[in-house]
Length: 435
Image 1: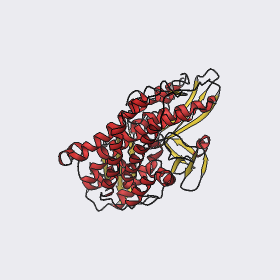
Image 2: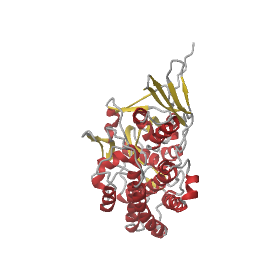
Image 3: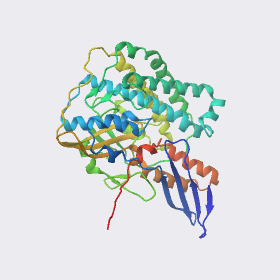
Image 4: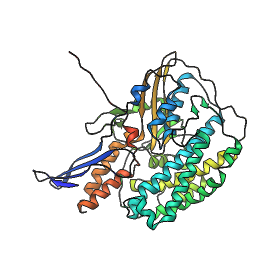
């Protein structure tokens, strides 16, 4: 919706964004033909997760934080378990880490498939929704549903259920899936690999606008593998590399009036987390086939066009299928599902790579294992400033479009990030003054 202001300016306002998870809007003001103000309005009510984690046992965050999101619960479980195990000095086995990675593959598959086909592809194919798209492209939608189901089934086999998994604990799992249970998934995963590679070629053929942003990319880095469930360092496109424990030295959260989610800055500047950052900073860790498929699309080893993030998500989708098959094929029965974890007083950071980007948790517990402080920083919060920068550039770059087309293009700029608004709105600074 657009309307004129008394001073001759113009407002472009979208009260409720479509095809994103959660409740948010967009507000852009023009003055004298130039963009004067840009706001990503996140008005979904705060959900207080950090507040009600305080006073709980150190074993509870994997179950509590998983409820923050039904699309990326494993990201929250992984970050929280990493933090607690670090505080307590517990070291999990390689087999536990492999199974955590397998569970994370399931999350990447279902989340990326959902975003690519149901939320983002309609923008490029000229449809208002995936339901309309299904009328003309039923084969594409059926493929999307198969891909997502393969991810859901994988999460169920490892995590106990697809939404808010219940098999994850500090120290590992309550039980390990058997070889037989995992091998039942193999046919769908084998088909999924080939369909995911077909999806790369499909989305690479979309008509992308010319759009370039010089963000500071931030992602996890692991010496041996593409980062999913964990990394050993945080790396940036500016050449920085530092331990996960030093994240709070660089990233600062702050509140802005128009958002119920905290913004964040990296060394005082906006930054970008997500598939484009992961890809640029970890291209060499992708499988040879995934690298070849990515380069065949023409995006190179680094992509700076956020509208092309759908291509990178498709590459990561294919890679997640490959990783799932690799882990299943190497799995044998008999591994202990967990290691003992004894609480001790301390503070630590846990981080992982959610489908939407790096997520990190900071916890402090006392000697009895009671949480005394908690901080949860999801990717959408970290990306808000970059999203608003994209909106400003889009509004300035395409002012010649009519109101309807410009509004759509700006909404698409937001959907490039696959924002999970519900993940971001866990904060409220409640102050009571009594006299």
